Length: 115
Length: 111
Image (cartoon, rainbow over all chains, first blue to last red; front, side, top):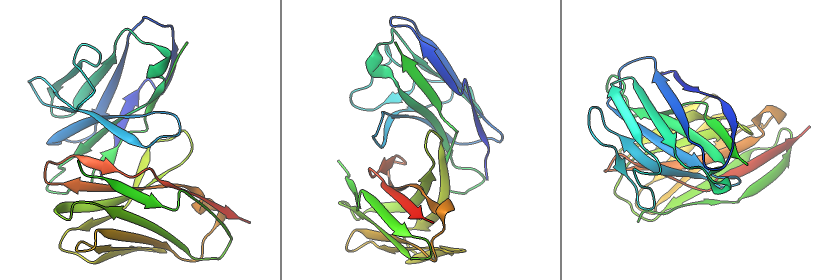
């Protein structure tokens, strides 16, 4: 199985600021994703992080608000820009495609509170 | 858009009772189905993965079945324990490699 770590684990931010979340996988993976889980809700896919190219965003999510980088096969970042209280959520990184396995593994999540 | 539904939304049982959690999906063209556990404020732990060609998977006290034709999966947890208290999420992987999640079933096992 893969081990996925995220930094920070939690943060409290002021409205209008930006936060960058890091995701590190302990082995090479083919696909990485970013999800959001709003309070009391299930997970919603934000985007697929593509290595060396622009991320693929789902409907309702845009690059200006959630810029994503993936410089190599094991690392990705998600930035939540110009934050508002509505951005308070858990943000989770996931990865798939480890040595032919199809189980999707998740990081522990980053709990974000925007005041 | 693929939809994944989980019933019930919440479940409370006494310790020792078997748990039955249901998941249904609207599009039968799935790649696989995965059951996750989420503890409060935590990330997701993968419990079982069922490939589209399989009918069930077992791990310890957990058994998950899959009926693609009817668009259903069931997670059985035998002899429940207080440590089984968590939210259980069903997620379906369709051929675009994106997981679609159900809203989850929150389980409470009373000692």
